[in-house]
Picture 1 (cartoon, rainbow, N blue to C red):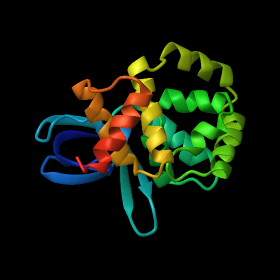
Picture 2 (cartoon, rainbow, N blue to C red; picture 1 turned 60 degrees about the horizontal axis):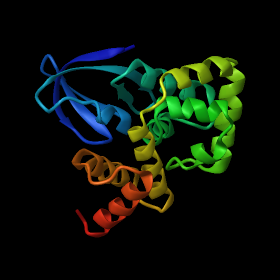
Picture 3 (spheres, one colour; picture 1 turned 60 degrees about the vertical axis):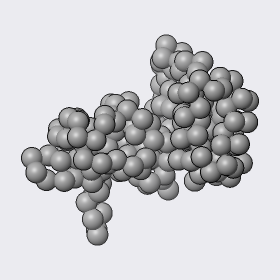
Picture 4 (cartoon, rainbow, N blue to C red; picture 1 turned 90 degrees about the vertical axis):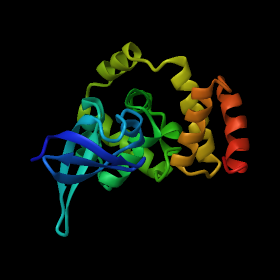
Length: 203
């Protein structure tokens, strides 16, 4: 099992990264949550990995934090009908703590807004993770202790609203992040309004 890669970041897209480890280039599929934490191309990087062995390929999935990898493995190993691709979509569409809180609170509506997941899949996630874990109270406490900042909450709301309107996750995420970095909008409503204008203008 390959548990991490220690090398240099060659290139990165919101869905994958290439890591040079001793002259060997590894292609690693990543969630948007990890993409935000990547260093600049050419910089040193240590990325945690999960190796999925299929009949036709060995696929590496990468994560910048242990919490992301733990949740990815939890979903893949415990929720029937969900493979690595959908597990990455979960991490791309919601922060680890927000997802845990949604499972604890049986918030099917929030989970079903994630791109690629429908209501039935969201219900299965809630049912099967709650049953497998049996630590709902601990999850709730952990979520409260590591609650996202108000800025992160507003950004998450805006991104989910854009996804609900039919925009692609990557497109929505980039538009909202750009607006926040430039300080052009703060509330979820403002972020949504400006992001819609920006996407419509093709910027």
